[in-house]
Image (tube, rainbow, N blue to C red):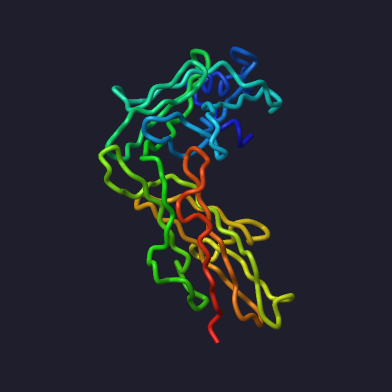
Length: 254
């Protein structure tokens, strides 16, 4: 029943309340998902791509009366405000104009005449080209520590100005745990507040914020001398950034 909350057509919702069941609409659809973005951002002057750098369309998933997945529906996508720094083709391919600053575009999707998604945000950003530490001198630090592994992603605008780039995926990986108790020690990557990023927590992904910053915290339990963490990021074309594979060597507080 939770997925049915995604149904946003007012007339459909009214019909469902009146008769006690979800009606079936065009293409056999009972309800739809929000828009699925292949990436949080598109580079200015380029097309929207997935995490591998391949051009990829906007998508909506559709479901039938029994929650069964249906083939991708025939959907249309459009920005909520025009003129817009993006255009969207009939098959959901987004192309961005060349812009001098970061722009946020809201997009909605429609299926038939009665189903519409909520708006999603897509960033139009300069193509990122560099990954770096927030401080070039920071290569070691004591643990536990907040925001120890802070990195920034930047790129050049069309005018040649270097700026922070939001909406870029940054990947953290614990590469090694060293010391007399390394085999039994626990080293995990956490989110702010100590929440685990994933069940094994040796990998984590962050998305750069409006300041182009990403960060993760490392928590260590056990008798270890050091923990090595690598940080990587790619351009929106899937190419490694300058400074890719940053290495942090972190040592627990004695």
